[in-house]
Image 1 (cartoon, rainbow, N blue to C red):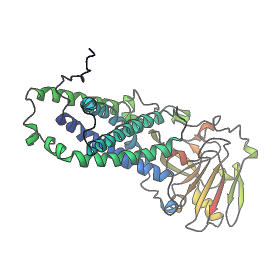
Image 2: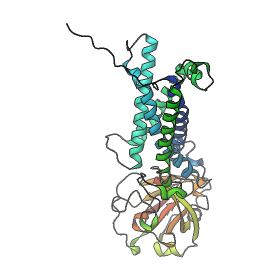
Image 3: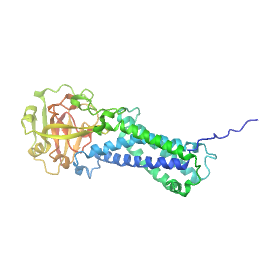
Length: 378
């Protein structure tokens, strides 16, 4: 006779609603911070047409803060999600697997939530290392799946609200039925999970929160490593920018009064120094001293209207973000420079020699390097 396969027996005492709820108290806020700051990042990089001219340029460190929180909360969520999945995975083996239409919909929403959450954290983590082993474009897919995860999470919380409420507090009636002996084990598990989340955060967050840079162990970037002690994501060679001969360089400023400037003429204009961070979407950031010509001065010389947007075009031959646009808030901000020097020295080729954009509260991918043209837009 053929023996009937019996479902596996899980002897551990922590695969329960109380443990899952306790971990969820940390995982939920981590996902919320990651989602909200991710919206800020996407909005700053790809604003809809109607508000694109009104993106704020202050505080100058705004994008550095929000993107640093985005990456830090995403990394902290990795051990929290793994622990959460460990507490609930025995439910995958429940029999019968589908008890009703309601139960089937609930399991479907959980499948979407788990798959989406794993996808978001995995692709986001690989993005910090600029490794893209997939055939799709990271930004739009990551953004779309984030909304899918949030929708599935809201549905899951609504369905599980009574159970979550029963196990939220130590004094909740729902905790009375739990074995007393599980208490120390649960506390030990939660302490270990909290320590793991804290450890991965402390050993990576220094890439944006530079006071902790000496603790960096796992972050793919160190804020002090790179040409002129500042990291770069795209080198001049990767962008197809060859050697730019000083005598041949021209900056074209295209407006009502179109003109061009040689490099010597740029250097002869009034120079201004600002301290601004480079804050990249991969999570690293660092402040530096920049010297150059104010963009607003170049625009006024071209007769630009006060509320006009500006298109910035690079001399690079390949790669994304060759062209970027600035709203009038950034273009008219006195901190926004066409920078010629970095930390007191001439720009290195990988930092955009001979001239690059640096603006406050702006993603690093939009701080265009090797600038060859400024165009006033209606």
